Amino acid sequence: MQQQGVNMGINRAHKTAPVRAVIFDLDDTLWPLLPLITRAEQTLFDWLQQHVPAVTRQHSIQSLRAVRAELLPTNARFEYDLWALRKAVLTRVFTLAGEDLTMIDPAMQIFSHARNQVSLFPDALPVLTQLGKNFRLGSISNGFADLAAIGLAEHFGVSLAAHQFGCAKPDARIFLAACAALEVEPHQAVYVGDDVLIDVQGAQQAGLRTVWINRSGKVAPPDLQPDAECRDLSAVLHWLHQHHTTTSP
Image (cartoon, rainbow, N blue to C red; front, side, top):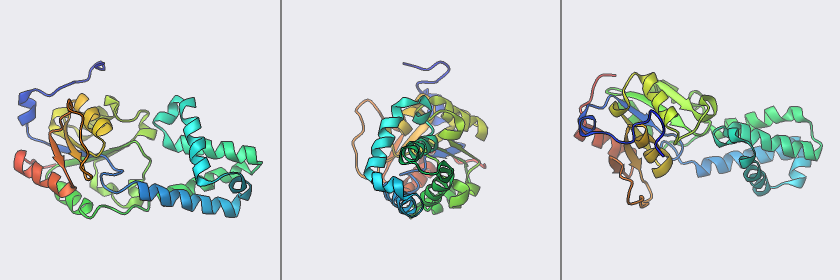
């Protein structure tokens, strides 16, 4: 169903309009997510073993994930606030284990710090640096990576995180808010992301042009066509310079 006030398509004139902004997804677009989360969960579990051992006597990393899956449908906020969801998991297991609840916030900080120890894809920083010379850059993420802690915040004019904004991709509102913050119309922006539904379809429904980062050769649904499909970020840079007039940020 088309959301009120959302442009479900881009007319031909909009398709040829100069691109003024490039907005990026973060996880699995600028860095791989699975190894990052695996390390962060292990780091947290090791800390829990030392500081709140009653929890780790009752739980493994896998069973903590099961608690997270169980809690996810219990609160609409958890759909866009993964920080709140992870904190709710700790609150439950700490309570049931009879552990000190004041240790939850330090535990969350341990996870957050580990979660921000990203390993960028090799082309991420060079491409961001080059694009920043000609386009306004932004980011939108459903996760809670801290771009300042990671060292990338200076590259982006706006960075929206679902847990702070109040809704998650593919909701059109977060895409439109990023465009407004960058002072561009949706058709003047390109959204770059790895998830063909959350990123590509979501951004298209908000009126943005889209680039699908498809590093693993996945097949898109037949009725979904991004403006470009790229195997890496360097190809995005090439596509933008080949097909779209660059402008000063």
